[in-house]
Image (tube, rainbow, N blue to C red; front, side, top):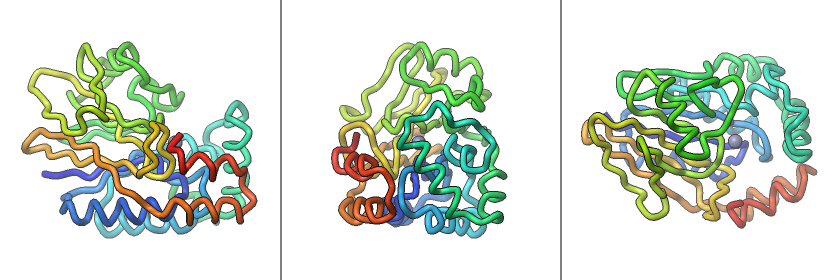
Length: 244
Ligand code: ZN
């Protein structure tokens, strides 16, 4: 069984299309979306529509992200950065009731035979705390019902193994060992923040017990131009080129 996992699309259609093509070429058996289809970018409707197709036609498993819940009025966002708040307000005006109902239907957390998945963490998913270091990971290992868990939210791909953090840039291909716990951050499709502007996603081969963190280039210029044209904060366009 091969899973294709992707997260933090953030209304970046150019990046999402490239990742979905790459996952199709990888011949994954099941798609998993790790949250935040909207926020920041200029194409919320098109991205939600692509995700909806994936859910309806391919049974994509999806969990909610904080930006998805923010546009639905399900989580407060007054303490977010000004640009994040402006993008959420702008996005709300672009989505109809059916789309909001679709986003609101995602659970905060899901468990399959092979792994658990949540946007931010397993300890208190509705509070959206990050898993930044091995101490955060250890708390989450205890909260997980499976040895392997996938998250997004920080926009930086990384693998945590009991007792250590594995640098995804040094080792994008990680073999999972029995009797160990893992939390894998799948990175961000539409707004990477690890200094690599390419869209990130993960292929998890549950039979071979192997996780591969992958990157694919997309048309950054086009996504940036749309953000500027939409009147969204310019820094949301600028940061895409730097991957920060
Ligand atoms: Zn995000």
